[in-house]
Length: 252
Image (cartoon, rainbow, N blue to C red; front, side, top):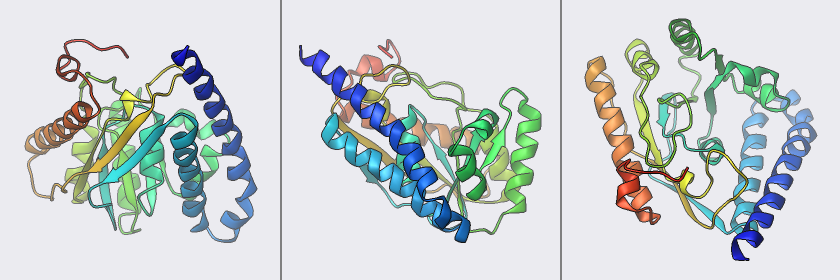
């Protein structure tokens, strides 16, 4: 019975979340047309709405830890579900994303992606995608934004490390920007698929930056180690059994 009630609450939460996306996104378009800078405020408004409603509708609280990135940096984040995107977008001051090209056709997301100068890439063409990312970042290298990239390229289930793609390392080397790793445990409460949202404390943690100057292989190894180690610690904090954290099994 308790699970059934939580599932119904989750369904209502998801429904209102997707209703509010066009209401807020389209409703505040005049502000963004007056000044593109308002688009960041509008995005944060929606993200904070979802965080607030999640806290009382399904009992899912959220917390940001660490020093929030400022200025022109790369943010390399663990990606477990849609919720970590919302936590990132609602926290960093001038976010833009490396996003899959299909989102260019998604209403609302497409508009705000353009206004924040997010970079759509075709994940099926890795070499071209990496060149496109590097060119786009260099074109706006001093725009004061925080470029968010998911090094694994897709959502990773709890207990699954997944392969880290070379694209983040190439950006690091070619742009000379520092990289702020970010860990999370949101997948425990908001899984990649399905309706159920579980109560608890979802955490996004910004970690100490990796400064420019490392060799590509050394950077990739350090980035993966710090993100995975911190994410594993957050999973344990959330009550995930160690055998799942270590990848022995997963319920996702």
